[in-house]
Image (cartoon, rainbow, N blue to C red; front, side, top):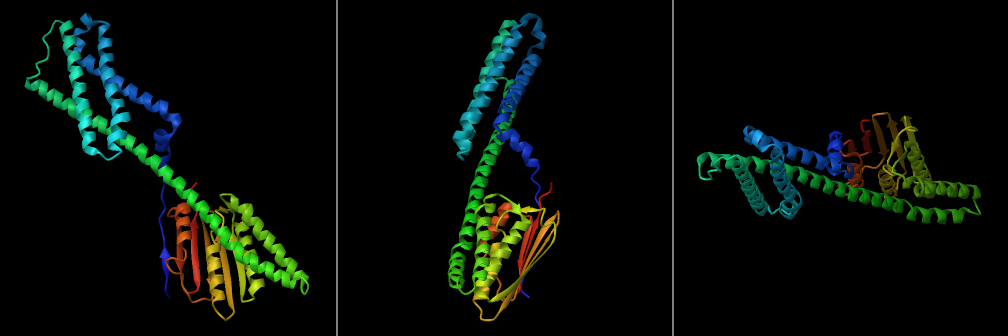
Length: 359
């Protein structure tokens, strides 16, 4: 027995919600900038206090102005990195230019801070910085590396935000694509069947008016479901089963080439699913019936509980769907259920399991 299986594993995406809110949401923008400013202010005042704490009696309130000056230098470089270097070079994948821009910015930052420190030492009557001493070089190199790493960390955060925005945009495009797939499914069910049923009812109107009325009634139910219920994101599983019953009933009344049976167990009247998930498989079975001369049977089985929905389409056909037969429905299932589904084919059956998302 040949079996083709398409299985997947559960993915937990809860941890992305908080990060998504902090990085993407416009409501959190003030908090993002507030945290950045508070961090830079803390570093600036701590730096100045450590260097000039011995001169506090002489400097007095000027110490706060000096710390404010250092804070402004950090602020300028940080926002220059966020709003100029990252979008202009890093996001555009011009990594060398971005590295040069970061290096030049940090060197200018250190030069301005050394100048501020020189001026402060002159106010205290101390000698200025010896730029050629080994201690000064070590301090500057250490500061250069530390500040560069901090700016790189900020760049990673901005890149993550950019990636999440792009991913959200792609998801929206995929959603639009899936919605268009649903519309195409509606069109596939409607035209040929509608033409066949109207033609059949026209011929039966005088000879078998009751049969003609039943066919038109079922057709109206089928069209009502497609026009109204399928416009929503989810429908009751029981409503989807009723739709499949109407579809198979109409096909049977038109062709008289097969028998069908639908059985269901469990919470089919309480679970919601995306519309038109099962119709491609049922249509495939009906198409295989029309390709054969012998009479066939189709048996649909639904079993639902709080954890999953199991669907089985059993048929008499020996054909197995090819790789391209259900490419669209596989894409739709992957988008809707990620990896929380399994799909398998055998010579006489199609098996689909939909795992419900964890609450």
